[in-house]
Image: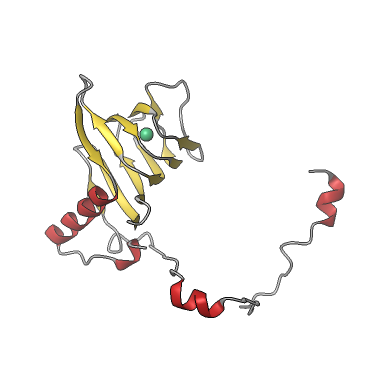
Length: 182
Ligand SMILES: [Fe+2]
């Protein structure tokens, strides 16, 4: 982008601190068929850390059963390994804290790092950091997990993630948060 296009830029158009009504030709259709957005605060009452193996936990944020999409924060509490897995869909991740890498690649993700994973990738997530890692993830499609001999173990998808969240809530008397389901 050149300086001249920068100086011509007019958006964002306002500094007005107010809610503004905007024209919408299909407001009535959106009202009937639109799906509201969602919000989950950082409160553990709204979504608890659910153990994922002995060294990790998952904080579930969103389940979309139409598209097999699930979003969450994966927390490895200290250095450790998440098993080898194969993707059948796409994943977007951002590292929030700590650091992690895949044994198959030569980079290390730290706070602010962006990771994009595509169908067919097979890799093994590790953290060498004594403080572990927190990774925000937006995942679409199933993941297949394999043992250290390459034998298939389990497929995890939106149904697995919903069951993971709801089983823990039931066992601990935590109300199911409808905001997680879109
Ligand atoms: Fe992955």
